[in-house]
Amino acid sequence: MIASLTGQIQKVEKDALIISVGGVGLRVLVPSTALQDTGIGRSQFLHTQLIVRETELTLYGFETLDDLKLFNTLLGVQKVGPKLALAILSTLTPELLRSAVLQDEAVILQRVPGIGKKSAERILFALRGKLDAEDATSVGLVSDADGDVMDVLTTLGFSIVEAQSAIQKLPRDVKDVNERVALALQQLDTGN
Image (cartoon, rainbow, N blue to C red):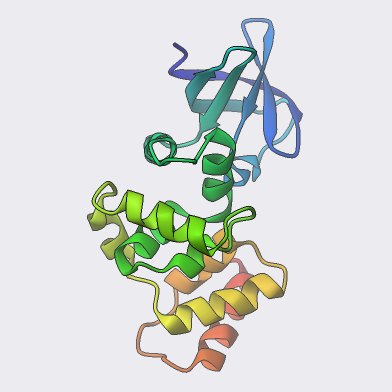
């Protein structure tokens, strides 16, 4: 089993990296967050999971052990395969996913392409008790106002990861959705 790898990036694809390891180019499927700040020639370390199927071997890579653990937890959910698990991690931060599970917010999972209402509810039900609640509560639960702010930001073209990062930096004493959107846009504009 390949637990991790370090190598030089040869090519960046839409959902994968080709990484040269010992003269061999390995294609590693990664969440979109791992594609940020990558470039050809850059050295890359990834925690990996090798999925063996009858007709193929597929390598999935993650920047953190937490992402790898979450990927494997998602694979334990009925009807969630590696591609859907990767789509979930590409769309939602681990904190946002944990928060959605704790609050039973299926609408958050419905933001993932390919997940409808019934699938989101089934996934949330299956994940209850399997995710570490401390991580979600340490960043704060997602309020209804935060959900509205996230909808506005993603409609404006920001990724869910960017929107979640900006929302986490907002002061909790500001409750008005319009004010929260304005502050989040300031965060995203300044890059702070």
